[in-house]
Length: 189
Image (cartoon, rainbow, N blue to C red):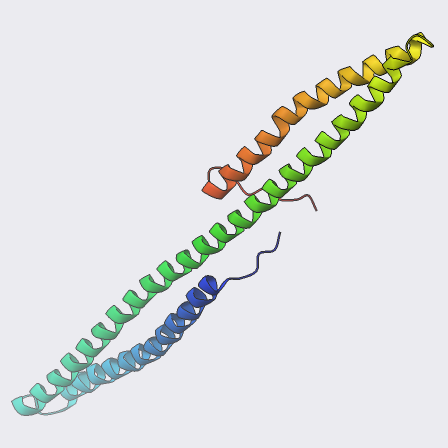
């Protein structure tokens, strides 16, 4: 059974899209920060290998550049990790809400089916009993016809037993599906 998305799910999905978009933007910034850190380290390494290592001012400047790039990358990495956790939570929330709505819809469908079955069986019982009584009434004319009427009355009793079991069982299933205690039944393909 297809379930129409509700505004709750639509809002959750909209929030999820925004989180993913922000995560993507932060990942781009993180890649830029990684590149800047790599460049700062390369500049520091080049200076130490090729330039005057007694120039403490230049060395400090290069160390500050590495430290600043490291700090920026660390902050962006932390933010990306936090957003990834928020995205996972939001995805779970969307899935949970979608399942809850599907369970509610399926439970309503099962309950409606149980009601329709009950109505049909009650109508069928009345018809069978009435017809059976009509046949029993002419028992004095034809014994076999009366026996057919008695048979129909027994069948009506069996149907009544089935009605007493099937309908409550379906209603119980509907409640269990809605509460999440039973799997959502799927119609055969």
